[in-house]
Length: 374
Ligand SMILES: Nc1ncnc2c1ncn2[C@@H]1O[C@H](COP(=O)(O)OP(=O)(O)OP(=O)(O)O)[C@@H](O)[C@H]1O
Ligand SMILES: [Mg+2]
Image (cartoon, rainbow, N blue to C red; front, side, top):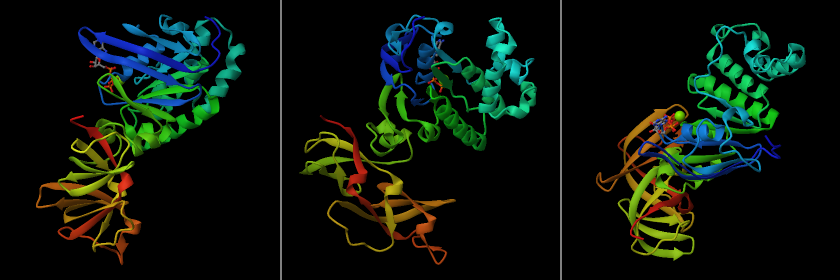
């Protein structure tokens, strides 16, 4: 195939159905050369299907896939400059680590002397020097995973596609492998596309993430953008933890703020969506943005929200405690997370179960994620 001048990917208006089930709905996406990009979404939302289309394992009903400047939509997987690591990494059980990584070179009839150094450099990159002559059954899950990734990289693809490569590993090993993936990405500098349903995994390694649900891309952004300014209620809920409060816009305070009448009382929100007085809306505030106080504080300025309630549950979870506040006679509740280092006084928590408490947060930490009656 023709020379590709960079490792970027452009997906244009992909639609795909299996039978009468539309699995991808008008998906468009641009991934930069060298980016670590993740496709994040719940099980069944179409991530693997999209990855198979990018890798050339599936021809979409409609739409185009560009690699660099070239339309590769109809080019089969073997002829694309992409390589895929599947969830079930399918190493050859009867081949050693070296032989697994060297497999594609030997199949092409290339002599060992011509690729030995290259294979050894990938063995080093995957920190597999101590395991060169072992068989897959003699390796841990994380080591097998590294062999699978090195085997894919040894073909020197321009884009590495990774479909939930860490899901078979336990939490600690997954953390370790994520750091390894990040390091390998930095060292080889090619484009990585990681498919995952684990938001923490995506947040911790990605340059940018596309959040998918039911075959659609809901938002594309950096981890910070998705966490701090989710565009929809689904994204606000899927990434991290959140409080959702519904209400009615009663006043536009200035071009950035509005007053919302909610079951928790009047709340001020930052406006990043157009709303009118009378709109029904859903707003959010992240639990860790809320301060839990035993005594009524004086407001730092007018752009704050302060509500009073009764703590009906406190969950201790190691480095932090989670406080659930009941407001206005059991009709609404809101959760706040406090780290212990700022919350212990003489070894005792200031606010206890059953106490009355105040919740204070910056108005700019509340966003509208849904507008009804537009
Ligand atoms: N070959 C196929 N034939 C029929 N339906 C399919 C096929 N492959 C996938 N599907 C359906 O398409 C939808 C999306 O599947 P896909 O494998 O892309 O989801 P996913 O986001 O990767 O999910 P998971 O996180 O569980 O791997 C699912 O409803 C699935 O049942
Ligand atoms: Mg999948």
